[in-house]
Amino acid sequence: MKRRHFRRPDHSIPELNMASLPDLIFTVLFFFMIVTHMRDVEKQVQYQVPAGTEVEKEQHKSAVLHIYIGHPLDGSSDEFLIQLNNQIATVGDIRRFVESERRRMSPEDQERLTVSIDADRDVPMAIINEVKQALRQSYALNISYAASEKALKKNIK
Amino acid sequence: MFRRNRHREVPSLNTSSTADISFMLLIFFLVTSSMDAGKGLKRQLPPPPQEQEQVADILDSDIMTVTLAADGALALNGEPTDLQQLQREVTQFAAVNPKHRVVAIKTSPEATYDAYFQLQNAIMAAYRPLKCQPRISDVVEHHEEKGGKRL
Image 1 (cartoon, each protein chain N blue to C red):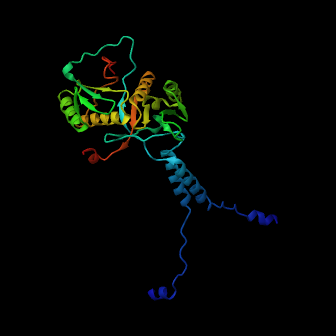
Image 2 (cartoon, chains in turn brown, purple):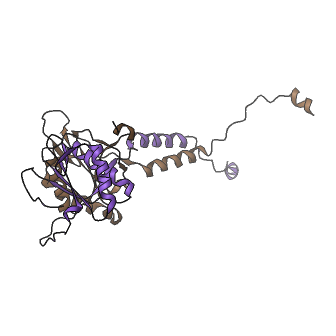
Image 3 (spheres, rainbow over the protein chains, first blue to last red):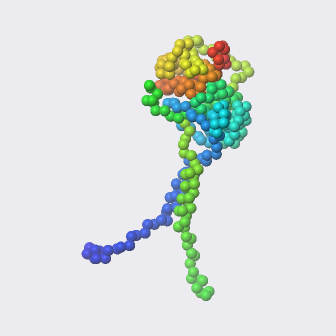
């Protein structure tokens, strides 16, 4: 019986069943659709966030508002600008911004609302303080100073 | 002719392109989405000042004053210090009674955000072994001015 097999070797490679491939890819697709969010803000300011050792990851992306503070992208001036959503704003606009964003959120997100202050390292504290006071006034009390993570060893000089 | 029709089976849909279509969607989402989770130092702000604000009774011995000058120089209770020393001192200070002891930060408005952030980072690091949130009174004011609002 073995011999007969050797004499008639089967040359055709069996075809792979591709029927489940679309399902597989769809699963991956849905995974990405759920875990990611679209980049909906075009940054108009440039900034370099400070580095710290105690930074934590953002928990709920949909509940985080960003306030960007930095130099204008085209380098036209040295002053620091505040960007809310897609426009350059002033400290006075922060309250309205937080209120309108809060209204758009789901009740769960409203509770865990966090404002991330993405500010350049060289921003003077006077501006940061004004922003913080405006956030207090609008009861957005959870804040996060955006930062990059620094290895612990580098901190000890 | 009619007889032939009766025998015809329902043609099966050609699904070989479904994989290509979903691949395209997948690549679109991969390109447009951002996976990078933002990182940051979490802090809690106090609620806005009320009209009748109660001044908390805190013993002077329970307050540690850290001053951040415009040039980034740190001072602890009036004496110059650096971040590492500050972190040790804060840990020592807060270990006695972390729930009651307060670290008061006085920042000059001209100080840079980076210096302030490093200070906050050092205080958070100092409180980490104590496993509790630091109580920080955070004021931005000039050196000369006295009695800023306690946050």
